[in-house]
Length: 393
Image 1 (spheres, rainbow, N blue to C red):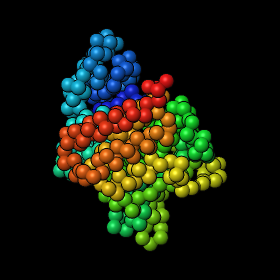
Image 2: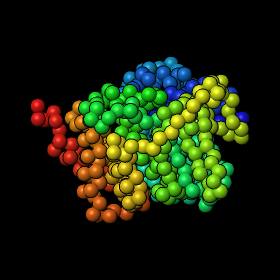
Image 3: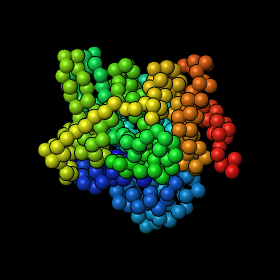
Image 4: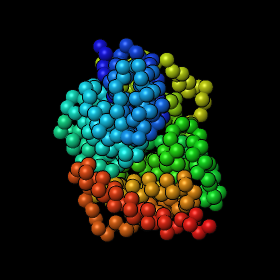
């Protein structure tokens, strides 16, 4: 049987890995639509490679370039938000939601259709609007499968028992490029150094979130919504080898773990499985060859963003939405060399403190989440402007 597939974020790292999985399983999938951000030529290349029926570019100004690049292929195309929504609305059994950042929230939510499977790689859908998003997942009986390697591993591990018997669900972190650096050295790190992830090849923003460990904090919030686990039953371990991606400690003392080589095609293939697992021609895990696996507790003094994310999860309400918005603005400012590395955590903490007294409830709709997100972004932009080092030159 052939299953139809739509890929949101087809030109990003997850989208490209998804394309590799689909190419390796030509008889299993038919690609209905692919969606990209601004790179018309890259999107056209993906659409051609996969034989997609429709390609949509979020950036309206690239519409003509996309149409020209697809000329003669028979692949339909469009640009702008209406085209993205057209791609989402097209009939597909599975939608891979891999648009990075809050920009992916609305399209991912629009993809929730009865009977569909969502392979979720957009963590912001749950960080920004977790309660509202998951309520719609349950209402529409959506089969939601996590693509992040950590959550995919937990999904496997949690199948070994009942939720009530989980003492602790743990996700792992490689530690990022600054795992062994002193705080003083980290303070002077450039965005280029922060983007040099030792294990994974991801986009710049996610790489920097990995360097600050904010990515792990966001993943804890995501895990809370995915698996209905309270903050005190979630934790992080630093694991430089990136072989154990997630593990569950049970009430009887047993531990179930999800292991795999660090290749995103493994969790993607798992999320795209149907009646049976896909057969992938990938290197197999050889623990004897690896020889040693090591684990440490994260240093939240050197990486305060993790503490901020944990605090936002415990605070609940709209605080995770605010945290994420402030972080996106602060990271963009860091990439532009407007602020330093530790200014990211200081900006995020300042914005969260600004909103803490208001005790905003968790957004009940995606639209409400996006309104709170925008308000927090305005506060974050003001905080960045007040500390902009380029303005002082």
